[in-house]
Image (cartoon, rainbow, N blue to C red):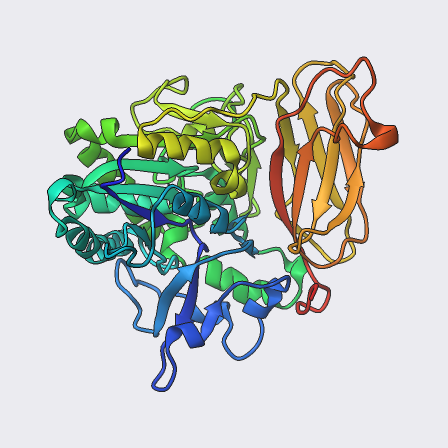
Amino acid sequence: MMDTDVVVVLPGIMGSTLGVTTADREASENLIWAPTAGAVWNNFTGAHRIQDYALPEGIGDEHPGDGVEPVDLMPDVHAIPGVWTPVKGYTVLVKHLERLGYHQTPTDGRPPNLVLVPYDWRLSNRYNGQRLAGIVEPALGRWRSQGGRFADAQLVFVCHSMGGLVARWYIEMCGGAGHTRKLITLGTPWRGAAKAVAQLVNGVTPGIGPLHLSLTEFATSLVSSYQLMPEYACLTDGPRDPKKTTEHSALPLPTARVADAMAFYAALQDAERARPASVEMAYAIVGTRQPTWTTITLNPDGTATAHDEFGTDNDYGDATVPLTGAIGHDQPLDTARIFRIRDQHGNLQRNQGVLDEIEEVITTVPVRRRASHPVTIRASAPDLVLPGQPLTVSASIDGTDTRHAVRVQVIDEHGKVLQSRQPSLTHGHAEVTFPELPPGTHTIILDSPSPMAGPSQPGPNYAGAIEPVTATTLVWSETGGGGSA
């Protein structure tokens, strides 16, 4: 068991709480992006709103000096309209690592060997990669100072989403390769995601009310959002010859920002190609079989339309990062170097199969996996539901077998089941509508009905259990404030 190493956890974009340091208050006492306890609007209203801290033009790889500092990992669900994807928190992941024996505080006379690294996710991944060196290397030095079997300890990174880009920059560009044993990424966009382009081009929907302007300005100011755009050719005017973001003259985004983001990917790829060990140390865990935007069409009116297909192919993904963007450069889509899990981006860090895989990679001890579910379900749900609109969830399975029993549940942040449906499948497809949901950030779980479900219990022709898939959606408040208590 590699308990001699130091494990480092990096969250994705929006996955760190942020605060502002003032003359009389520390950042932790003055949070502008914080756990919401059922009222995400608290981050968008009040004296210190997250959108008041948009980045200035030309910030590049610097800090704007606005007093904003990262404080902690986000423990619960978090979402900003127009920025990436609603994501569940990191409490489950951290507790799993602690059960493996890793600790955040000195224990039994030993320094910590579990380092959680919140970071200012507004900023460039280059900036945060360089900052990472000043956090993890001193922690590794303290751990190594115990001597003996700890003297040769190294770092093991566990990174969700954009956190993997930060770690890759540190490893390849900031001298981290010599200190790193393993890099485990969960849904990291190794080559970017088309969703980032669509969000930057289209902005936040006016349907959320007056906040849409300030939230659009905030979302489109983030250097990090540009560094989530695809490096692969994603812009298409038809089934042939897709273009890269730097090759399409009609892309209505700042040319310098787009070019800088693509230079970020190019530098990483060049460094990784020049160091073969980078492939050997990387363990990519990716979500699959979910409808995922993969390409973009630019419309004459300046908007963008996203498509799940790449030409005539649909490679799916985790509903945020397509398979094309989730796999490292120079690797085929059928590579055996990745671990595939059938779940969505915002839940990968909580998925039990993912936790098992992390444990096996870290400890090098095979984990007895839970029984595999024979049926894969694909779920499609919106990130945002506007006031007065119902939530519509689509479910699809391969084939046309109608014997599969499907349950769709909507659960609030406190774990209360708000509504539940068991639709019938027609040609492997069902669509479920949930009206009058309360405002809040809700979890959607698609699975098989419980065997103890009473009258709805599957009959003798039941075709098999469904592997659960979890999505998250934000139901907006008419007033832009409040939400469930």
